[in-house]
Every structure is written in C-alpha cells, then in structure tokens.
Length: 75
Image 1 (tube, rainbow, N blue to C red):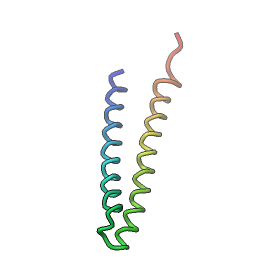
Image 2 (image 1 turned 90 degrees about the vertical axis):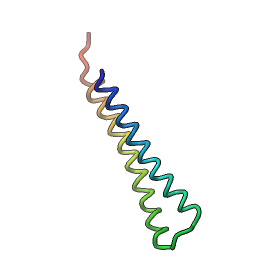
Image 3 (image 1 turned 180 degrees about the vertical axis):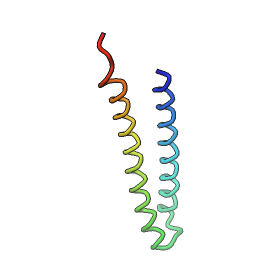
C-alpha cells in the first residue's frame, strides 16, 4: 500500500511541474511580448505539454488498475 501512496505523490508532483510550465508559456503567449516564430513554437509546446500531462495521468490509472485492481486476490 505504501508503494501506491508514493507513486501517487510522485505523479501529482510531475503533473504540478508540467502544469506550471504550461501556464508560464500561456502567460507569455497571452501577453504577446515575443516574435511570431517564438509564438508559434510556444503554441506547439503547449499542446505537447498538455498531451504529456494526459499521458502521465493515463499511465497512472493503468498502472494502478493493473497492479491493484485487475490482479488483486479475491478473498
């Protein structure tokens, strides 16, 4: 059970870091204090970052399901 707690805390931390990076890019994008080329690159990075966050959460769900739900012994 302690492994699940540790894994959960780790995943929450990864999501927080990813979300923070995305929000920084969003703020700069919203203020438009960069040139067009950088602006386009940041939009692409934001999409990739959001996809990465979705994959982290999906991976967590699948690992928990595989480890604790699908293979748990029936008493």
